[in-house]
Image (tube, rainbow, N blue to C red; front, side):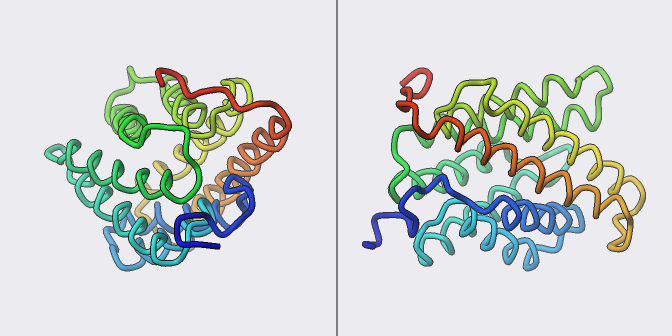
Length: 211
């Protein structure tokens, strides 16, 4: 394989267990503000999730780290900077063989669900349904799948966020059973996403919305 392609024949054929476990580790490190463990988890998550060659995996993980560092402060953070970092990440993904979507649009959708989640954390008027909608829109765009195919994965990831939020409120203990629950839900979420992809693999890919 050349450096311009993914390391897999089909870049969407990711391992949901590896991705789910890595994302749980990344979330835990994020809330503890442990940035080196976050970067290690991001490397695993990007490699397992997107199948890019190692150099692009490392650069992509760095962009994910920077996006999260810029987003993390509350209430004063840098959403524009976070979105710019995620745009650079998605540009690497597109150049590595995915194609078919606009990195700027994908980055905007990514940061939008971060925004909705933060609003949900701090405003009881923001419902989980809105968060599911935001994640569903991102998945449907990046994977070019119909909404019903990706909504179950989005709903499970929101359930994982609920476990994460309760884990944070309880003090972020590494042995808290909520962390194990979060991990199981993330694995289930990415398994559902992979199932949605596999079910539609034989169908022609539709163009991304707004392309």
